[in-house]
Image (cartoon, rainbow over all chains, first blue to last red):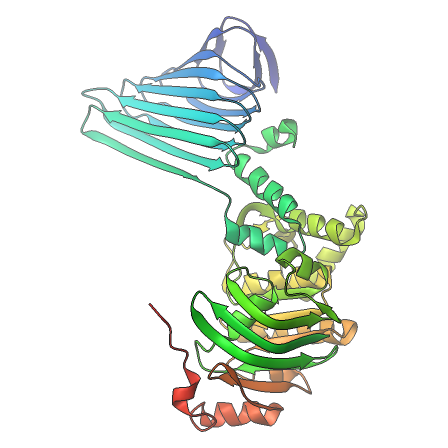
Length: 216
Length: 252
């Protein structure tokens, strides 16, 4: 695992990276097969460029911060993106992810899991597929739980090409009462049961590594 | 152990049972039979504290009136329900849930080594791969595997009243034999009370002595022993009840 303290523009080639970003306007160039774990609890602005024939898996776990974060991701040709972000919010925050697909044969899968404990959590995901492109797939899978706070999610896909597979799924709700009752029927207190369910939800799109460094 | 005294049970505006009386002692096996829709599963859910049911009358467990206790409090006192279709919970493993449940029950830290060892032993007895211990609860499992996983939970939590809501439904012959053997072993080892809801005698034939109750018309129509179950299975509900009495009229 490569651990980097990042402050400007970086080029990442095949490998797995833990990034702690210290500068507001960071640019990342991705070539090859790259995995990034962001270790920041906040991140203001980030541009990611996926070069042709590259793949990128991102895992980013945000917690308990008031953030205003904008992430721009650019895909050109034959690239593969898996962008996973989980946020646990106690204050007003605003997250925008823009995914620009400018070439052909790219796949993009953006998964967001968010729990709002207090105030408003606003999440906007924009995927834009350019004109005259073919063979692109854009997926958005966004889920939020109101746990005392509010969540606003906007899943936008703008497809300017006819030859694209695009799908977006958004759900916002509260904890599943049936699951909670099931746990209580095993002798688990309501509060403990809630904790278990929220924990499983927020980590459901994270990999094992983030689960170990992310804490409780 | 468990007493239902003059119990009236409603869900929304639908009356399921009126003036129901039932007493189950420790070490006894009681079987509820009846047509589909008479409210057998509702009794199971009500006993587990499902908040959707309105109850008047008295539910007593080990001398304590438990009407106002929630599901967790009832489970802590030893009441355990295996539903006919156990749900799956993504992201929560069996081990994770059982660790929390056991800590809550004993108020003591868990010896992880002993805990894992015990679970592995139970898995072996249930003919269940030990990988299930660290898998998400019932996710991707067949009906038979789900029932066995519920038994795995039961063996670890050691309840004193086990409610089995059609645990025998949807099991193949081998799985049914494993489930029955496991339940019999648990019964002989811990002497709990069993309340079994079933539509056949395959499971209850594994036990030597059962009290059988036929439900219908918002009450217990008949009580007896295994011969009543045989009679019902041989002749159907018609010969044992007035057919019109056995339906609950459900409001749309």
